[in-house]
Length: 289
Ligand SMILES: CCCCCCCC/C=C\CCCCCCCC(=O)OC(CO)CO
Image (cartoon, rainbow, N blue to C red; front, side, top):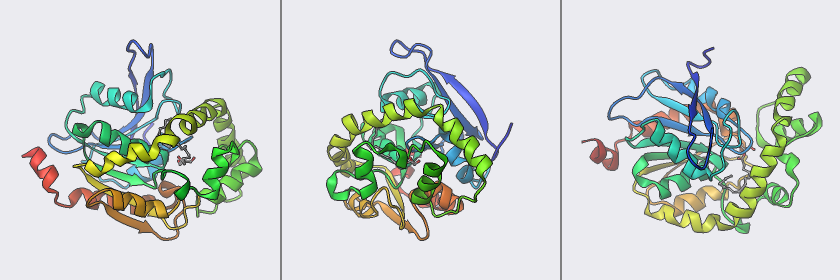
């Protein structure tokens, strides 16, 4: 089946740490020599599907890949940490030329940290409302989440599902109870796995975020930051934190847009991503000439 021009693919990793570990991903188009592939990383409890609205708007001729992170979607069997797993994925796919990495929310944090850990792999990054560091930027919602009120992003009932949708998105989730129920049911089967990922992120990654992000000031790649003005989960002040930290980052705010930027503004997100790609960058020019 083809949706938004993508094909679903599987990539067996299966190294010593991850026997039988498999990445699942969507791919549109194929590698273009001397042009960066666009790689999309979803947020917490989300999956590759979240990017279809964006990828649909990206013209044929560009190479797009949206992955399911370990612990999400149809990727299975991983033991090692996300950054290492994602790095192995790029190696296995032979994405040896620097890529354009796009991440949303927790996926934006992962994209940012990936760029600092593996600078030679990326020439451009786009961060959609990444998780800001520490209490100074912690919203009421994020602090509730940290204290263990998980249903804000991991709804277990239909009522919680509608409440979560309302908090995270400006789009009216029309009262289609049948579709909502089907969607909720598919998520419930992953609930325990998602809870484990969230617990580990708050215990191991969240306390060190500021320290991890400190490296961003040394980034040589081009950086685009996008934030929804109505984001209630990741503080809009985070946009200034990241743009102050990263030299020459380009910052764009979307009006009438909540935390789920790919849901609220898919077309605008795609067009900004492409526009940024077209912007002349001495860094990228030097890479490919
Ligand atoms: C597992 C390895 C992770 C390593 C990186 C950790 C960086 C952040 C650390 C802790 C914060 C926990 C996440 C809080 C919610 C995120 C919001 C989010 O993703 O929103 C989704 C909707 O749920 C959007 O699609």
